[in-house]
Image (tube, rainbow, N blue to C red; front, side, top):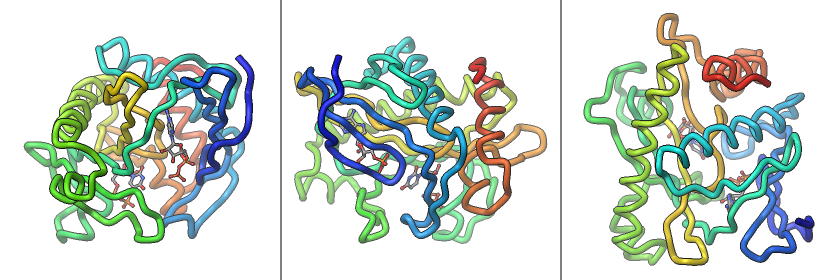
Length: 237
Ligand code: ADP
Ligand code: UDP
């Protein structure tokens, strides 16, 4: 497999074509950004940690029957993945109240959400990723009604698998964001990444924040804590 031209450079990853038209390389960089790219820093080893973390989680999800982009780890900071036609929406599930939900509704951080809350956001930095609903997605043609239903059901399936995985490591999966795309056969497939950059994880006992909120809130030890999360779920880095 050969790396070809750059397809896209995002805030944290660079995507490359390969000699296989159905496969891409995701290169996880050390760049860490928050607040729509307003705060950006390079964190030592973050690319490597997130690349291996993402591969580990996507493999666990595949084993549990979720269709993901996963192909193989090809270097410390790069993974080979299925090329998807990405749907420009973010699927968020929340088990506990945090982040924008707390700011938007004035509810207490840490409040348990039963049933869990599902939200869609439009992936658009210039508009600050506004919240949208099923009707916006269908009306503007970002995805069909069947694809919307599939994204929701897979996102909840992921919740069952990962809540249990993190619970075994003494952590609470507070919330997370997933992105989906369509593969060459027309199937909805989980793409992008699942890392502590795109979810919230708290220690079950102390409620210590173990995710990107450490960076957003300037709490320090960002990558060290991501490594601790990995180790608690059986991935040694
Ligand atoms: P952002 O675009 O939000 O700054 P990244 O730096 O993570 O984010 O860039 C990665 C880009 O690659 C995103 O736009 C994402 O939608 C896209 N992407 C992720 N996985 C795949 C895939 N399997 N196939 C095609 N594109 C993908
Ligand atoms: N999230 C993400 N990318 C985004 C927006 C949110 O990965 O562009 C994740 C975020 O890390 C959290 C969840 O989605 O785990 C819910 O985020 P929220 O809406 O609370 O926004 P935030 O306050 O984190 O910006």
